Each structure stands twice: as C-alpha cells, then as structure tokens.
Amino acid sequence: MRRLVATHATLLRFIVVGGGAALLELGTFELLARAGLPVVAANVLSFVLGLLTSFAGYRLWTFAGEHTTPVTAQLGAYVALALVNVAATSAIISVLVSAGLVPWVAKAICMALVATWNFLLLNRIVFRRASPSPTRTTH
Image (cartoon, rainbow, N blue to C red):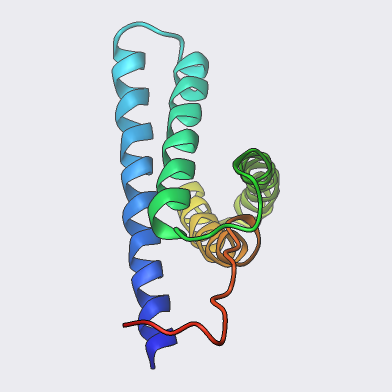
C-alpha cells in the first residue's frame, strides 16, 4: 500500500513539474516571439529553459533521493532522452498525419506517449535512487 501511495505522489509531482515547465516554455516562447525574436530562435531558447527547469524539478523534487548516478550523467541522459523524444514523435506525427489524422490530435497522442515513457524511464533509469537498506528502520 505504501508503495502505491508513493507512486501516486511521484506521479502527481511529475505532472506538476512537467506541466509547469511546459507552461514556462510556452510563455517564454510567446514573450520572445512578441519581442521580435525569430520564432526558431524563440523556440530553441524556450525549449532549453523548459528542459533545464524540468530537469531541476524532476531531480530535486519529483525523483528526489539518494541518486545512484552523478548529476552530469543524469543531465546527459535527460538531454539524450529529449532528443530521442523529438525524433520519435516527429516520425509518429508524420505517419499519423499522413494517415489522415488532424495534426493537433497526432501531437496530443504523442504527448501522452512521451509522458508515459518519460515517467517510467526517468523514474527507473535517469533519476534512479538507491534502495533503502532492508535493515534500516524509521522512527
């Protein structure tokens, strides 16, 4: 039961951090674009800000604990996962739109897929935490 509650709490924190980072990215993009920055530059800058914000939130809050990998390795894995996400979702969106799906629906499907596999990969691999010792007691 404790494990189920802990998983639900982690999932809620994942949604809060990811949603907050997405809103920050979108808001930053809009501000930069309205300020006259070319949209590609605005996209890259807002993406990097969202990526770093979500990384920090996930590492420090969502998947907090005694991590088994150094922060630099975690950041490298996180960036690699983001690049895989972009490539995979671009391919999936292309196929879905070619099959007649409305682009925003294809994007929404991909976002749900990415959120699902990201939660699993971030929790189990990127931000892996040391297991508590079986002899350890809490008071």
